[in-house]
Image (cartoon, rainbow, N blue to C red):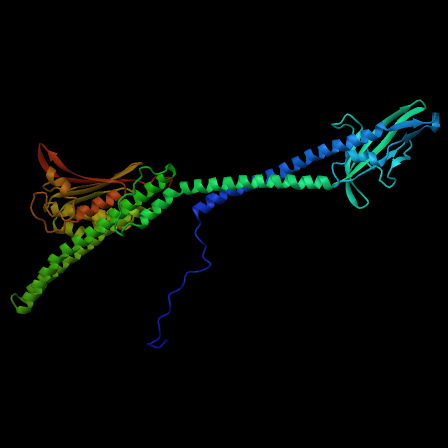
Length: 490
């Protein structure tokens, strides 16, 4: 055990590993911007490759023009089998085809038999076959290769050469280093990137502004709820709210309406309880003081005190039952209960009262499953039957019937009492209404029928009190309760 003077343990801190609540704005921004960024990235790559392809096509045409110029300088020397291709082209003539001093050109001209006619002897010969067709009106093939350790772009042209001594097909190879192409590729990449970056920035700014404006009603709703007092349960305004927020506002207003109803019920319960219990407690105090002073006999005092305690206990139990009825409105998991069995048990519990008044009692029930808690059906059946017993004259008839069909179960309690007037019928269901059918004061607490009405409404049923008449004479009162039955397949 810790010593008595030990300090209290500090309050536990929030769990740092608890997941942070998600942000609606962050979700919207990420959900919109990430796909946009992905699309822009893919579009940038595609545009860059298309630009490179266009640049390669342009520079390849220059290489083809160079190869054709070399082909125009070829001629055939000799006759017959000894005919050979000759070229009078000097390397300095290629300077006209060099775009600038950042790139260099190399060439090789091969004769009919593949022999070197002119150019660089170590320039590698083409190892690939010419394509069957291309976009050029010539037998030309382009590919990437390496010469003297430097990457080059190679153009191979098959050039027909004819002369008086013979004719044949010469092979012209022109290689260009890639400095100029790489410079152009970098420039294309930079131009594409900054344009796409500007586009992304514009899109991001637009999305941020739109998301801020779209989530403004949510923030306004949060601020409005945060500024409310604890007991402010007035409905939230829905005028001007976005359509997407209306379901949330409606659900919130319905919830606050239920809370307001529950709070009002609690206030009324506390007020009524304090008011109703004050009378028996005051009576009990007077009776105890009178007994202590010896104003009445001890046995009479004990009987009066016991009677007062019994009434206070009955009132407290009914007040608790009335408060418990509110729980039925929120309970969505009510079990299936046989109402007929409950009615028989209640009749058995009240049989001493029936026998005491020599009432001609009849009970007719059949199995009737309904959705309700056992205590609710017992309270409902007991209050109705107890009221009927009190209002039935001694030696008169009292009948209870319970019938049902596929949709509805009906409990009818028919007494032989004086009935009730039309003006009193609705007032009897109000709490603490203690008038009898004749309009005189009753000894009850006035909560029985109020409890019955609350239970019936929470179970989706109805209750009515109807006078049973014969030739304009009231023969008694029928209290009928109807509740929905449980389908046979559930």
